[in-house]
Amino acid sequence: MKNALLKLTFCLVFLISSAGIAQALNKKSLTSELGKTEGISLDAKQKSSFDKANNDLVTGLFDIDKKKLPQADRDSKIDGLFDKRDKSLSSSLGADKYTDVKKKTDKNIKQLKRKVKLAKLVL
Image (tube, rainbow, N blue to C red):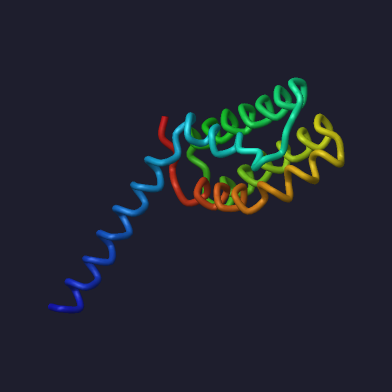
């Protein structure tokens, strides 16, 4: 009896934590998280390119979320979208500025990518 109760408790905690992660990922919060430049200053043109790359990524993520894909395919497409964002930023910001931004934001982007893979997104 105790074993069954313990398993039920773990399942309940998992479901609640998964729902909490999913609720935290809406378009506004996702765009905000991606938009953090961690103290790197960008001029107007670079900021515009940065915002466009982030908006394209968020749109792509929500498009993937609407499809019923197996987890491996979904994860692969998510990785592809983040890679596409990196290429876009690299070409629009230039190698030096992109390297600076990547160094400062890499940890945050990795955590965000992990959250996106674990949770269904909410609109």
